[in-house]
Structure formats: C-alpha cells, structure tokens
Length: 153
Ligand code: ADP
Ligand code: MG
Image 1 (cartoon, protein in one colour):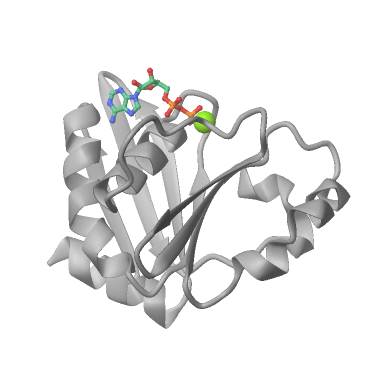
Image 2: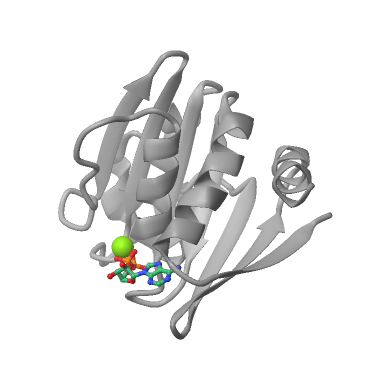
C-alpha cells in the first residue's frame, strides 16, 4: 500500500509501531514528520530511535537542530527545523553527508527545510485526535512502500 492510517491512542501505541518499523530500517532512508506543535513528532522519533537500539536519553533537537546517534551499521540523524528562519541555515549541517546510504534521517518540520533537505522515502503526518493521535503515512519511494507494506502486514 502507498498510504496507511492508524490511530495511536497513547504513547504505548507509538512504541509498538516503532518496534514494527525499526527492523525495516537497517538500510537507512529519510522520514519526514509533519504535524503541529504537540502532534507527537518528537515522541514518534524518540520511540523509533529507542526501538533501533539507542539507549539512554534521546533529546529533542529543538535547540540544536540536529541530534545524531550511531548503532552498528547505521547513523541516525534526528532534525527539528522549527526554529530555522531560512533554509540557507541548513548549509552548515552538511545535509549531503546525511544522505549517505547507511544513514537514517528523521526530520520534524521538513516544510522549513527547503530544497536542501533530503527527499522523503516516507511522509508521516500526525494530528491531535484526543486522547491520542491520528497517524497518516504516505510512501514516496520504493523503499518507503516496502516499509509501509512491512508495518501494515
Ligand atoms: P511535537 O514534537 O510534534 O511537537 P511531542 O512529541 O513533543 O510533539 O508530543 C507532545 C505531547 O504529546 C507529549 O506530551 C506526548 O507525551 C504527547 N503524545 C505524543 N504522542 C501521543 C499519543 N499517540 N497519544 C497521546 N499523547 C501523545
Ligand atoms: Mg518536536
């Protein structure tokens, strides 16, 4: 399937989804996380990074713009572009290097990144649906389609 919808009633549901998705990401790729403030983007990214095997505190990159992690065979980059005023500010981040085959790039507020931002394999949109969140997923590449097939199976 190219799209997928799921109600996430609580953070446990986010963690369960992250555990299903994580094993599919060993080749890396790019996930864009859309949604308003408080929609659950960081919660999802944190759950995914944890499910990939990163232990310890996973900080929100709200102030640093980027937080990076390394697990065997994979570099993980978590970006939050909320605070950038101009996509030109991304130049110093070396986004080209983030696109290496063996990296997973998770981007909050991708709409602020402009042309320099690596294109998404998977677009996730989160929205408030009290008491939880509604997730819509859209595959944007064959890799993203494979991930969706894996999590919706
Ligand atoms: P964002 O990064 O989109 O601004 P956060 O991930 O920081 O949002 O989440 C904001 C709040 O929403 C947090 O307090 C978090 O616990 C809560 N939250 C996230 N996902 C869910 C969910 N599926 N169900 C209920 N609460 C959630
Ligand atoms: Mg956030």
